[in-house]
Amino acid sequence: MIASNIRYQATNFAQITRFTNTIYAGIYALVGSYLVGGTASIGQLISWQAALVVGLIVAYGFVINDYVDVTVDSYSKPQRPIPSGRISRRTALWFAGGLAIFAFLIALLLGPSFALVALSTIFIATFYSLQLKSTVLWGNACMALLIALIPIYGGMAAGGPTTLIWIVAGLMWLFDFSHEILKTTADWWGDGKAGLRTVATVLGVRGAVRIFQIVAALFIGVALLPWMLGLSNNLYLFAILPCAVLPNLVVILLLARRHDDAMITLTLKIMRMMWISNLVPILLLG
Image 1 (cartoon, rainbow, N blue to C red):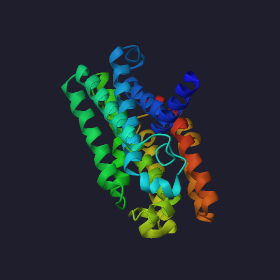
Image 2 (cartoon, rainbow, N blue to C red):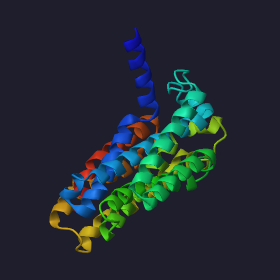
Image 3 (cartoon, one colour):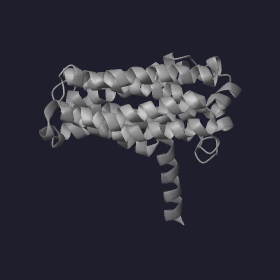
């Protein structure tokens, strides 16, 4: 009985932190270390500590966002731990605080610059949930910034960000910016009921889709720049085409045909899968 209850609670906390997304964030931090220091950096403790800080802050961001978004989620995502009653708001707030403190303490051990960046990202994630979520594009840009900082933080653990890391961070910013815009089309009904101002609630699903297509097309062009400028070899081109360029193009074309709920769901699944496939060309930049 006790073991079953522990498993139940562990599952709830894993859900509220989006455990798989947290793992992906840590992996991208390790990729940042690899791009700066090569395979040797992956064997260094500091790289894994930086990845842990990233994972904890990402988990914090999800929890604090769910804490603030309980009204919105009660409309569109009532199955989530807080609106369903499986985790109380008070417990979620304490859990979020614990994650943030743990992340900051580990960052302090790594050095002042790591602590400063960690504290800044915690602040940005909090500010997003409290103020920027109900904005047109600004909140999306803020979330993309948090994602772009992940490989930079990992690169710091291997000696500091390089030109290559900034390129990867820029690509991740563009990709997540487009992804965040597209996600507003799936949440437009619940966001509208809660009175939030997002791209989809202000411009409509059609308008949000058009903006997504523009940003996604821009991402495709920028993703090819490392090869066009001679900063990568042909292997990068052979990987970026099937892993990022073509899937993005498919999503753009599918949404040009129609943008009903079923199509939005399908294209968001493709975008989520690209967070895994995008690792291949990024690793080939190293």
